[in-house]
Length: 457
Image (cartoon, rainbow, N blue to C red; front, top):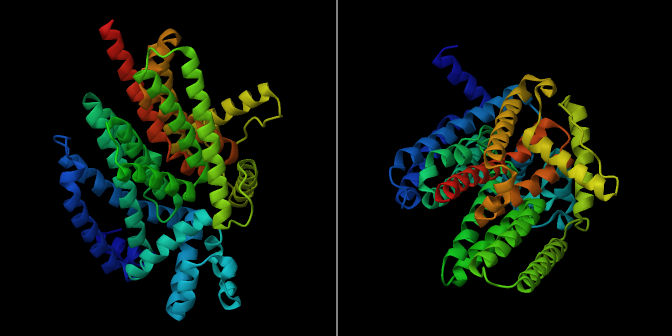
């Protein structure tokens, strides 16, 4: 197929309006990136080419992903989000009042004339997390002339800036690891694919988590944090909580672990009782935070009361049904039988499936093979780091840097939840795309810390 044929094919795929809206959107995003280049590369020498190179790569990855999902999969959450947003656009242009009602009010307050559109795709407006995504996507669709691809490019750009901010933060603090950090944060294959694949939760989650982590770490580095700095951290946390509740729970526990370790670093001579009391205080903070999040969700008016266990079981049932319906590659984990031993077996099984599976014999479909290769590399890298550090020095090296502890606690908690609930490798690949950069970055920093400690001794 020549260039003309490819052009016609893309036109049929993405719509005629996209042939002029998408180029204009790309130009606008490039101009925006250009205005941010000084800020994004500040204190990061010789990174301008990398900044624009990764940006261009993400734009191309977004277009490729949309085409891939359209031609090969033709089903799944991406198309459900697409259907909801396109339905909203049609409703808005047919009756702007109904469109604004859908955009600004919860479904329970919709009139009978609006509710009839539920069967046409507006069901995604009912849930709070998916409702945020489709409402934001709906606004973009209206602003960008109805172009789903152009709106997807905006999502991909937001995820790119989230990743770059994270990369910039760690590269400034670990300048000798800039190349390794570029690989683990900016070029993880599943992350590039899913945070650049359209209007779904993953780009927003990755952006929110990255912003929260950078602002949270920066908050502790300042001698006197301003109210504005604290509000940035709070905003990032609430943003993540609204889109993916369990990711916010993981951030809460990771933040508590970080605070405990920072307290120990700053007050090394404090006695054991003080440390125990501080840990107890942080446990209360985590509990109070989780309870407040629960109450906040109830206040926002979710149909059912928030319960992490119920959400997990509901997610498991949904993913089982989706996998059966699409012929997906399913997997199983050790179910928790209510015992302490069973709990640890279930946790280990969930972590293993998230980070290190599918294995080669589980790659029954060609689309699962890239996930196998990525998981194999993750496994080999993990074994390499653990083998080099050895068990005798592992914990001393791990607790030498609170950043490592935060990243590992966060990624492991999310790995447990998504490994236990996804139950098919396609869904798992999408869910874990937002934590792999943090896990791999933790390993890179951990290995670097070990080498530096070894040289100093």
